[in-house]
Length: 106
Image (tube, rainbow, N blue to C red; front, side, top):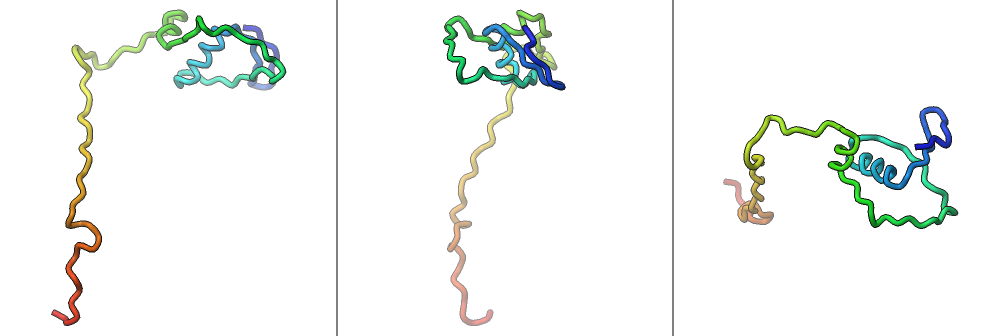
């Protein structure tokens, strides 16, 4: 990628569309952090994006990143926690369900 400008810790880069898509994917996955300058509104060039479609697996394979491994190793389906049951309302706890107040002390 070509560095067009630098100010402090900020860079303006010129990247091919497929690289820009990979950067965007990594940023969205939380695996990396980038700040990029967008093209100005006057740049209205159209781009054919029909052949694009970056996935985490494609980025891992292309750049030789370590492939995440399940730890501890599991065989068969991965165990998951049972869903928390939805509590059912108790009719006796509804407002106004208490006994009427008495006029005389007990």
